[in-house]
Length: 388
Image (cartoon, rainbow, N blue to C red):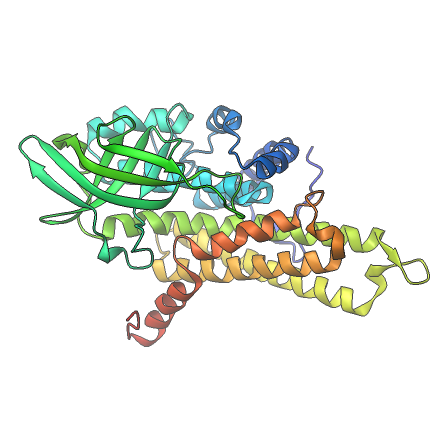
Protein backbone atom coordinates (compact mmCIF):
# COMPACT_ATOMS: atom_id res chain seq x y z
CA UNK A 1 0.00 0.00 0.00
CA UNK A 2 1.05 3.58 -0.58
CA UNK A 3 2.40 5.53 2.37
CA UNK A 4 0.56 8.64 1.13
CA UNK A 5 -2.98 8.45 2.50
CA UNK A 6 -4.32 11.39 0.54
CA UNK A 7 -5.85 14.70 1.54
CA UNK A 8 -9.60 14.55 2.08
CA UNK A 9 -10.97 17.05 4.59
CA UNK A 10 -14.55 17.11 3.25
CA UNK A 11 -15.00 13.36 2.58
CA UNK A 12 -14.67 13.91 -1.16
CA UNK A 13 -13.56 10.31 -1.59
CA UNK A 14 -17.18 9.36 -0.95
CA UNK A 15 -18.03 10.98 -4.30
CA UNK A 16 -15.75 8.65 -6.26
CA UNK A 17 -16.71 5.20 -7.52
CA UNK A 18 -14.74 2.07 -6.58
CA UNK A 19 -13.27 2.05 -10.08
CA UNK A 20 -12.14 5.68 -9.78
CA UNK A 21 -10.48 4.97 -6.43
CA UNK A 22 -8.77 1.89 -7.87
CA UNK A 23 -7.35 3.89 -10.77
CA UNK A 24 -6.07 6.53 -8.32
CA UNK A 25 -4.49 3.88 -6.11
CA UNK A 26 -2.68 2.32 -9.07
CA UNK A 27 -1.15 5.68 -9.98
CA UNK A 28 -0.45 6.46 -6.32
CA UNK A 29 1.53 3.28 -5.80
CA UNK A 30 3.50 3.88 -9.00
CA UNK A 31 4.47 7.37 -7.80
CA UNK A 32 5.42 6.18 -4.30
CA UNK A 33 8.03 3.90 -5.82
CA UNK A 34 9.76 6.59 -7.85
CA UNK A 35 10.02 9.57 -5.49
CA UNK A 36 13.78 9.10 -4.87
CA UNK A 37 14.31 8.79 -8.64
CA UNK A 38 12.45 12.04 -9.29
CA UNK A 39 14.53 13.92 -6.72
CA UNK A 40 17.72 12.71 -8.36
CA UNK A 41 16.38 13.63 -11.81
CA UNK A 42 15.61 17.16 -10.63
CA UNK A 43 19.15 17.42 -9.26
CA UNK A 44 20.68 16.12 -12.46
CA UNK A 45 18.34 17.94 -14.85
CA UNK A 46 17.18 14.81 -16.67
CA UNK A 47 13.90 13.11 -17.49
CA UNK A 48 13.55 9.51 -16.14
CA UNK A 49 13.25 7.74 -19.50
CA UNK A 50 13.46 4.41 -17.69
CA UNK A 51 9.88 4.93 -16.46
CA UNK A 52 8.27 5.32 -19.90
CA UNK A 53 7.66 1.63 -20.59
CA UNK A 54 6.01 1.06 -17.19
CA UNK A 55 3.77 4.09 -17.64
CA UNK A 56 2.72 2.68 -20.99
CA UNK A 57 1.95 -0.71 -19.43
CA UNK A 58 -0.15 0.98 -16.75
CA UNK A 59 -2.19 2.71 -19.45
CA UNK A 60 -1.27 6.29 -18.52
CA UNK A 61 -0.70 7.49 -22.10
CA UNK A 62 -3.94 8.67 -23.66
CA UNK A 63 -5.78 7.06 -20.74
CA UNK A 64 -9.09 8.83 -21.45
CA UNK A 65 -9.03 8.06 -25.19
CA UNK A 66 -10.79 5.14 -26.88
CA UNK A 67 -9.32 2.46 -29.14
CA UNK A 68 -5.80 1.69 -30.38
CA UNK A 69 -4.85 0.13 -27.04
CA UNK A 70 -5.90 3.15 -24.96
CA UNK A 71 -7.33 2.50 -21.50
CA UNK A 72 -10.61 4.31 -22.21
CA UNK A 73 -10.94 5.69 -18.68
CA UNK A 74 -13.44 8.34 -17.67
CA UNK A 75 -12.18 11.89 -17.51
CA UNK A 76 -12.42 11.82 -13.71
CA UNK A 77 -10.22 8.72 -13.61
CA UNK A 78 -7.79 10.42 -15.98
CA UNK A 79 -7.76 13.49 -13.72
CA UNK A 80 -6.93 11.34 -10.70
CA UNK A 81 -3.98 9.85 -12.57
CA UNK A 82 -2.74 13.36 -13.40
CA UNK A 83 -3.13 14.34 -9.73
CA UNK A 84 -0.97 11.47 -8.54
CA UNK A 85 1.68 11.95 -11.22
CA UNK A 86 2.11 15.62 -10.35
CA UNK A 87 2.33 14.74 -6.68
CA UNK A 88 5.51 13.05 -7.85
CA UNK A 89 6.67 15.88 -10.11
CA UNK A 90 5.18 18.32 -12.62
CA UNK A 91 7.67 17.09 -15.21
CA UNK A 92 6.29 13.57 -14.96
CA UNK A 93 2.71 14.75 -15.41
CA UNK A 94 3.77 17.05 -18.26
CA UNK A 95 5.31 14.14 -20.14
CA UNK A 96 2.10 12.13 -19.87
CA UNK A 97 -0.07 15.19 -20.68
CA UNK A 98 1.87 15.95 -23.84
CA UNK A 99 1.90 12.34 -25.00
CA UNK A 100 -1.85 11.90 -24.53
CA UNK A 101 -3.58 15.26 -24.77
CA UNK A 102 -1.30 17.05 -27.23
CA UNK A 103 -0.06 14.26 -29.51
CA UNK A 104 -2.42 11.27 -29.34
CA UNK A 105 -5.58 13.39 -29.05
CA UNK A 106 -5.00 15.42 -32.27
CA UNK A 107 -4.06 12.28 -34.21
CA UNK A 108 -7.19 10.50 -32.96
CA UNK A 109 -9.43 13.53 -33.52
CA UNK A 110 -8.02 15.03 -36.73
CA UNK A 111 -5.85 12.31 -38.25
CA UNK A 112 -6.43 9.91 -41.12
CA UNK A 113 -7.02 6.21 -40.50
CA UNK A 114 -3.48 5.49 -41.70
CA UNK A 115 -2.02 8.08 -39.28
CA UNK A 116 -4.01 6.64 -36.38
CA UNK A 117 -3.04 3.06 -37.12
CA UNK A 118 0.61 3.90 -37.52
CA UNK A 119 1.14 6.11 -34.50
CA UNK A 120 -1.47 5.63 -31.80
CA UNK A 121 -0.56 2.09 -30.66
CA UNK A 122 3.14 3.04 -30.52
CA UNK A 123 2.42 6.24 -28.58
CA UNK A 124 0.06 4.46 -26.20
CA UNK A 125 2.69 1.87 -25.28
CA UNK A 126 5.48 4.41 -24.93
CA UNK A 127 7.35 2.78 -27.79
CA UNK A 128 7.22 6.14 -29.56
CA UNK A 129 7.38 9.58 -27.95
CA UNK A 130 5.67 12.69 -29.25
CA UNK A 131 5.82 16.46 -28.83
CA UNK A 132 3.45 19.35 -29.64
CA UNK A 133 4.99 22.25 -31.52
CA UNK A 134 2.86 25.40 -31.34
CA UNK A 135 4.71 28.07 -29.31
CA UNK A 136 7.22 30.22 -31.21
CA UNK A 137 10.01 32.49 -29.98
CA UNK A 138 7.88 35.58 -30.69
CA UNK A 139 4.42 34.14 -30.14
CA UNK A 140 3.37 32.38 -26.97
CA UNK A 141 0.07 33.78 -25.73
CA UNK A 142 -0.86 34.82 -29.28
CA UNK A 143 -0.60 31.69 -31.44
CA UNK A 144 -2.54 33.45 -34.18
CA UNK A 145 0.65 35.39 -34.91
CA UNK A 146 2.69 32.29 -35.74
CA UNK A 147 5.29 32.69 -38.47
CA UNK A 148 6.07 29.05 -39.20
CA UNK A 149 4.89 28.40 -42.75
CA UNK A 150 3.88 25.36 -44.73
CA UNK A 151 4.01 25.61 -48.52
CA UNK A 152 2.70 22.97 -50.88
CA UNK A 153 5.27 21.74 -53.40
CA UNK A 154 3.94 18.98 -55.61
CA UNK A 155 3.36 15.85 -53.52
CA UNK A 156 4.99 17.37 -50.45
CA UNK A 157 4.81 20.19 -47.93
CA UNK A 158 7.80 22.36 -47.11
CA UNK A 159 8.00 23.74 -43.56
CA UNK A 160 10.03 26.76 -42.47
CA UNK A 161 10.06 28.30 -39.00
CA UNK A 162 10.95 27.87 -35.35
CA UNK A 163 9.21 26.55 -32.24
CA UNK A 164 10.35 26.85 -28.64
CA UNK A 165 9.53 25.71 -25.08
CA UNK A 166 8.53 22.35 -26.51
CA UNK A 167 8.20 19.60 -23.89
CA UNK A 168 9.81 16.31 -25.01
CA UNK A 169 11.21 17.99 -28.14
CA UNK A 170 14.59 16.26 -28.26
CA UNK A 171 13.14 12.96 -27.02
CA UNK A 172 10.36 12.84 -29.58
CA UNK A 173 10.10 10.40 -32.44
CA UNK A 174 7.20 12.49 -33.78
CA UNK A 175 6.35 16.20 -33.64
CA UNK A 176 2.84 17.55 -34.14
CA UNK A 177 3.77 20.83 -35.83
CA UNK A 178 1.36 23.70 -36.42
CA UNK A 179 2.14 25.96 -39.37
CA UNK A 180 0.46 28.60 -41.50
CA UNK A 181 -0.58 27.33 -44.94
CA UNK A 182 -2.44 29.18 -47.70
CA UNK A 183 -5.81 27.99 -46.42
CA UNK A 184 -5.08 28.61 -42.74
CA UNK A 185 -3.24 27.00 -39.84
CA UNK A 186 -2.63 23.30 -40.34
CA UNK A 187 -1.12 20.46 -38.32
CA UNK A 188 1.65 18.19 -39.63
CA UNK A 189 3.23 15.00 -38.34
CA UNK A 190 6.99 15.38 -38.66
CA UNK A 191 9.22 12.45 -37.82
CA UNK A 192 12.59 12.64 -36.12
CA UNK A 193 15.39 12.56 -38.67
CA UNK A 194 13.44 14.32 -41.42
CA UNK A 195 15.97 16.47 -43.36
CA UNK A 196 15.66 20.13 -42.36
CA UNK A 197 14.18 19.32 -38.91
CA UNK A 198 16.45 19.86 -35.91
CA UNK A 199 15.79 19.87 -32.16
CA UNK A 200 18.00 21.29 -29.42
CA UNK A 201 17.52 21.05 -25.67
CA UNK A 202 17.05 24.20 -23.56
CA UNK A 203 19.52 24.19 -20.67
CA UNK A 204 19.89 26.33 -17.56
CA UNK A 205 16.33 25.79 -16.29
CA UNK A 206 15.65 26.33 -12.59
CA UNK A 207 12.16 24.85 -13.02
CA UNK A 208 10.87 21.59 -14.58
CA UNK A 209 14.35 20.15 -14.34
CA UNK A 210 13.03 16.59 -14.53
CA UNK A 211 11.46 17.43 -17.90
CA UNK A 212 12.99 17.85 -21.35
CA UNK A 213 12.30 21.27 -22.91
CA UNK A 214 13.47 22.03 -26.42
CA UNK A 215 13.62 24.37 -29.37
CA UNK A 216 12.73 23.08 -32.82
CA UNK A 217 13.82 24.47 -36.20
CA UNK A 218 12.48 23.74 -39.67
CA UNK A 219 14.56 24.80 -42.63
CA UNK A 220 13.11 23.72 -45.98
CA UNK A 221 11.83 20.66 -44.15
CA UNK A 222 10.04 18.52 -46.73
CA UNK A 223 7.29 16.17 -45.52
CA UNK A 224 4.87 14.01 -47.56
CA UNK A 225 1.42 15.36 -48.37
CA UNK A 226 -0.16 12.67 -46.21
CA UNK A 227 1.68 13.97 -43.13
CA UNK A 228 -0.93 16.73 -42.75
CA UNK A 229 -3.73 16.12 -40.26
CA UNK A 230 -6.73 16.26 -42.62
CA UNK A 231 -9.34 17.18 -40.01
CA UNK A 232 -7.61 20.19 -38.45
CA UNK A 233 -7.94 23.61 -40.05
CA UNK A 234 -7.44 26.93 -38.29
CA UNK A 235 -6.58 27.63 -34.65
CA UNK A 236 -9.54 25.60 -33.44
CA UNK A 237 -7.46 22.42 -33.79
CA UNK A 238 -4.48 23.29 -31.58
CA UNK A 239 -6.69 25.15 -29.09
CA UNK A 240 -8.88 22.07 -28.66
CA UNK A 241 -5.74 20.07 -27.89
CA UNK A 242 -4.71 22.64 -25.29
CA UNK A 243 -8.12 22.37 -23.64
CA UNK A 244 -7.48 18.65 -23.16
CA UNK A 245 -4.09 19.33 -21.61
CA UNK A 246 -5.30 22.18 -19.39
CA UNK A 247 -7.96 19.92 -17.93
CA UNK A 248 -5.17 17.56 -16.88
CA UNK A 249 -3.18 20.45 -15.40
CA UNK A 250 -6.16 21.52 -13.29
CA UNK A 251 -6.19 18.09 -11.71
CA UNK A 252 -2.43 17.58 -11.68
CA UNK A 253 -1.49 20.61 -9.62
CA UNK A 254 -3.77 19.33 -6.86
CA UNK A 255 -1.23 16.57 -6.34
CA UNK A 256 1.60 19.06 -5.90
CA UNK A 257 -0.53 21.12 -3.49
CA UNK A 258 -1.45 18.03 -1.48
CA UNK A 259 2.17 16.93 -1.21
CA UNK A 260 3.28 20.36 0.00
CA UNK A 261 0.43 20.60 2.51
CA UNK A 262 0.94 17.11 3.90
CA UNK A 263 4.70 17.65 4.19
CA UNK A 264 4.12 20.89 6.13
CA UNK A 265 1.38 19.37 8.30
CA UNK A 266 3.51 16.45 9.40
CA UNK A 267 6.56 18.66 9.90
CA UNK A 268 4.62 21.09 12.10
CA UNK A 269 3.57 18.25 14.38
CA UNK A 270 7.07 16.80 14.72
CA UNK A 271 9.09 20.05 14.81
CA UNK A 272 9.43 21.45 18.33
CA UNK A 273 10.36 25.00 19.35
CA UNK A 274 9.75 27.25 22.37
CA UNK A 275 9.30 25.17 25.54
CA UNK A 276 9.57 21.94 23.55
CA UNK A 277 6.14 22.33 21.99
CA UNK A 278 5.35 21.36 18.39
CA UNK A 279 5.07 24.36 16.13
CA UNK A 280 1.62 23.04 15.21
CA UNK A 281 0.48 24.41 18.58
CA UNK A 282 1.02 27.98 17.39
CA UNK A 283 -1.90 29.96 16.04
CA UNK A 284 -0.01 31.37 13.04
CA UNK A 285 0.97 27.87 11.95
CA UNK A 286 -2.59 26.59 12.25
CA UNK A 287 -3.90 29.56 10.29
CA UNK A 288 -1.62 28.65 7.36
CA UNK A 289 -2.62 25.00 7.47
CA UNK A 290 -6.30 25.96 7.68
CA UNK A 291 -5.96 28.19 4.61
CA UNK A 292 -4.22 25.45 2.65
CA UNK A 293 -6.69 22.67 3.42
CA UNK A 294 -9.62 24.96 2.65
CA UNK A 295 -8.23 26.01 -0.73
CA UNK A 296 -7.22 22.46 -1.63
CA UNK A 297 -10.74 21.26 -0.76
CA UNK A 298 -12.37 23.92 -2.93
CA UNK A 299 -9.98 23.09 -5.76
CA UNK A 300 -10.80 19.37 -5.42
CA UNK A 301 -14.50 20.12 -5.79
CA UNK A 302 -13.86 22.34 -8.81
CA UNK A 303 -11.78 19.62 -10.47
CA UNK A 304 -14.29 16.90 -9.71
CA UNK A 305 -17.24 18.88 -11.04
CA UNK A 306 -15.27 19.79 -14.17
CA UNK A 307 -14.46 16.11 -14.65
CA UNK A 308 -18.11 15.11 -14.31
CA UNK A 309 -19.10 17.80 -16.82
CA UNK A 310 -16.43 16.61 -19.23
CA UNK A 311 -17.70 13.06 -18.98
CA UNK A 312 -21.17 14.40 -19.82
CA UNK A 313 -19.83 16.37 -22.80
CA UNK A 314 -20.74 19.68 -21.14
CA UNK A 315 -17.34 21.09 -20.14
CA UNK A 316 -16.44 24.25 -22.08
CA UNK A 317 -13.03 25.88 -22.66
CA UNK A 318 -13.99 28.81 -20.42
CA UNK A 319 -14.73 26.34 -17.62
CA UNK A 320 -11.29 24.82 -18.08
CA UNK A 321 -9.74 28.30 -17.84
CA UNK A 322 -11.20 28.70 -14.36
CA UNK A 323 -10.02 25.23 -13.36
CA UNK A 324 -6.47 25.77 -14.59
CA UNK A 325 -6.13 29.33 -13.31
CA UNK A 326 -7.55 28.72 -9.84
CA UNK A 327 -5.90 25.41 -9.11
CA UNK A 328 -2.44 26.45 -10.25
CA UNK A 329 -2.66 29.62 -8.16
CA UNK A 330 -3.65 27.84 -4.96
CA UNK A 331 -1.05 25.11 -5.54
CA UNK A 332 1.68 27.74 -5.86
CA UNK A 333 0.49 29.51 -2.72
CA UNK A 334 0.39 26.18 -0.84
CA UNK A 335 3.98 25.53 -1.88
CA UNK A 336 5.08 28.96 -0.66
CA UNK A 337 3.25 28.66 2.67
CA UNK A 338 4.60 25.15 3.19
CA UNK A 339 8.15 26.30 2.53
CA UNK A 340 7.61 29.05 5.09
CA UNK A 341 6.44 26.54 7.71
CA UNK A 342 9.54 24.42 7.19
CA UNK A 343 11.83 27.42 7.60
CA UNK A 344 15.35 26.89 6.26
CA UNK A 345 14.70 23.15 5.90
CA UNK A 346 12.14 24.01 3.25
CA UNK A 347 14.79 25.02 0.72
CA UNK A 348 16.59 21.66 0.76
CA UNK A 349 15.70 18.84 -1.61
CA UNK A 350 15.36 16.49 1.34
CA UNK A 351 11.79 17.78 1.11
CA UNK A 352 9.80 18.12 -2.12
CA UNK A 353 8.38 21.60 -1.48
CA UNK A 354 10.96 23.80 -3.21
CA UNK A 355 10.96 21.48 -6.23
CA UNK A 356 7.17 21.77 -6.50
CA UNK A 357 7.36 25.55 -6.05
CA UNK A 358 9.88 25.94 -8.86
CA UNK A 359 7.89 23.65 -11.15
CA UNK A 360 4.60 25.42 -10.47
CA UNK A 361 6.07 28.74 -11.59
CA UNK A 362 6.30 27.16 -15.03
CA UNK A 363 2.88 25.53 -14.84
CA UNK A 364 1.39 28.94 -14.07
CA UNK A 365 2.82 30.22 -17.36
CA UNK A 366 2.49 27.41 -19.87
CA UNK A 367 -0.63 26.38 -21.76
CA UNK A 368 -2.25 29.74 -21.10
CA UNK A 369 -0.84 32.19 -18.58
CA UNK A 370 -2.78 33.25 -15.50
CA UNK A 371 -3.55 36.55 -17.26
CA UNK A 372 -4.85 34.99 -20.46
CA UNK A 373 -7.18 32.68 -18.56
CA UNK A 374 -8.45 35.68 -16.59
CA UNK A 375 -9.37 37.29 -19.91
CA UNK A 376 -11.10 34.12 -21.10
CA UNK A 377 -13.20 34.13 -17.94
CA UNK A 378 -13.78 37.88 -18.29
CA UNK A 379 -15.03 37.47 -21.84
CA UNK A 380 -17.33 34.67 -20.74
CA UNK A 381 -19.02 36.76 -18.02
CA UNK A 382 -19.20 40.08 -19.95
CA UNK A 383 -19.44 39.05 -23.58
CA UNK A 384 -16.61 41.48 -24.33
CA UNK A 385 -13.17 40.32 -25.50
CA UNK A 386 -10.24 42.22 -23.99
CA UNK A 387 -7.20 40.44 -25.41
CA UNK A 388 -5.74 43.50 -27.09
